[in-house]
Amino acid sequence: MSVDAENSPYQLESRQVTREFVRILPIALFVAIFGVAFGLAAVQTGLGPWQATLMSATVFAGAAQFAGLGLWGAEVALIPLMAITLAINSRHILMGAALYPMLRRLPPGRRYGLLVWLTDANWARSYQQYQGGRENLEAILGGGLALWLAWVAGTLAGVHLGGRLGNPQAWGLDMVLGCFLLAMALGGVRSRRILLAWAVAGTAAVLAWRWLPPHTHVIVGALAGGLVGLFWLEKSPHGH
Image 1 (cartoon, rainbow, N blue to C red):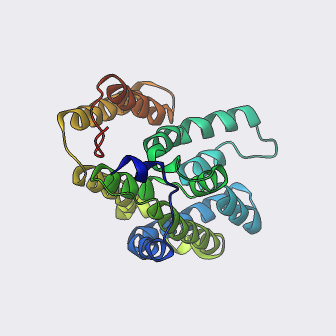
Image 2: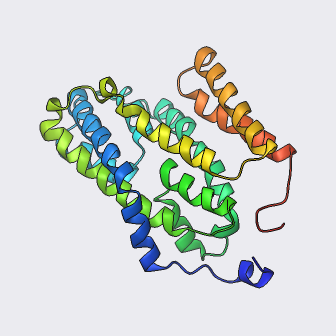
Image 3: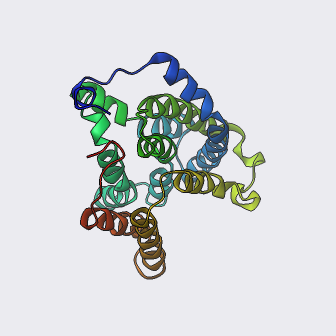
């Protein structure tokens, strides 16, 4: 990519946004199933149907929402709730940093508006293509919209008829997103640096999951892998 292209404003293409919306729909179907599970769990915890749906529409963070239900009650401890939400979603700091070479070419309003739709799945799609030399922030917007709609629709279904689903984990559906992310990782650029970062992140996360408090494995794994990238620098796919 030329220096002029890197410094020019990023133009989101509506047709590409639509294509990315359609492309991630298979994953969105499984997200909807877990939305059903969340809706059911939320109602059982004591949230009203509109409260659970509003939470999914505004928070849009499945793991953090499930964790938040464990702290829900007549009185909510805000500090622990904020801490656990930060720990679970801290990976977004590194995810946003990885996309910064593209994001910086957007005006601040559009940049932060776009990040509202950032999830693991559409980040993996966008970053995989960036590693291959192609810019695709449309995956964040199009894929994020598809996943958000699926999450909210699933929550709506769950608060009304989620009891018919049973336990999604019994069917192995909790592994679908993990398998998708693994496929994105293996499909990207492979180098000793990338492989070491994944190995260190995975090992650190497993050890933290085994020995540290709940949910801290997310931030520990992310930071461990990030440190590999910090101290082992190499040229970007665009030549700098």
